Length: 291
Length: 257
Image 1 (cartoon, rainbow over the protein chains, first blue to last red):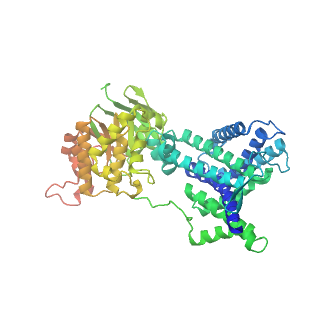
Image 2 (cartoon, helix red, strand yellow):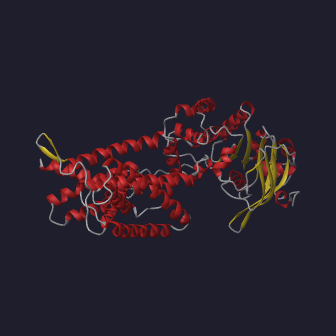
């Protein structure tokens, strides 16, 4: 039953990658900018949660800490768009990319100054608990991560498909000019998307912190999540999640069944294979525009 | 003349350093269909974009229903009741026909009336009802144009700005769409401003016409007057007088030059 346990922990890791990838793709689709600070966003979310929830800091009740963390992360996402990104709108892609990379560095240092550079973990009610099912032992944290991700996916699906703001976000990402013509305040909608991706990064951070320890360089797993987004076909939300799952599942299996070191390479090897054989990603939504 | 629904006065717009509109004035009265004719690059689309707020004019005044709208944010212009149906359809390709229509009503909050208007749109364009759950990107060009018009109607506009609705469509489809536009004007009292290269069909539909060349209005009058005008016949409708030799055409000068 080794196999099954590897699979579950792989899926749980994959959920975190998938959620970060989701943030990449949401912002890319809506604003055509790639937010390379998305991984650091996640790291910051984890630390904010630790800051609110851990007994060494504010020690607030777990539920309250979660709500506050999501509020803070949403506000941060919105402010980054409002104060920084909107000023470089219309500049070259390079300028935007460099800005977001720099933003990542800033977040890493700020996190280091506030919470220190040594790894910390989140005190949570699930720590150390196990779920036994038909002879298989699963970490309660892994199960919770998977359940939360599923719930969030369903929630986002309904949000984008059914609500007016969700539809407007889709519209702004599919055809920005037409969105203007429909009377959609595109810039404000983009601000909301940044806020939403901040919230998603916050959730990813909380999930990550329940599974393991966090330090200011944790955000570098954003690179793996970026690979996940590309594998999924940068531009498709379900693709981003699935890409994250694929990478999450490959890692533990590569480290279990392949020589040492291969688990680090495996995700990028897969990325190369996908780019060679299906350059637009596994789940691309690209379609030629009719004239 | 001050009671015109849309009043444009001496508007100048630039693309960077290039002056695309050089002082245009025109009026659209309530209930009218006004067409602006002109060749490629005459500035027709720029004029539309300037009205809908996607571009800001450098000079001049645009008054709509008593409110000055020049330089306003596009979503605020839509809220005033001006809907721009852009050249090349610009539907939301990955969304269903139904969702596209819902987005047309983005500025409205009266849910019951929105559903009523959706049915109204379906009654004018039955094909959209059949395809309501399909992704808009899979519709044919004509169906996409119908969707673009239907989506515009969902805003319950006081005026529709139609940019080249005939673009890339078969003559038969163009006839069909213009017939629907005529009915919309007659039955729903939708005021329209129509930009076209297909002068014949545009003048047939419109009440009043303006002719634009290199950023200026060079001629205007009732659609009938324009249709009778020799210049329009020669340069926009392609009518050939009998016995006129081919070379004569390029020797002739337009009266406004």
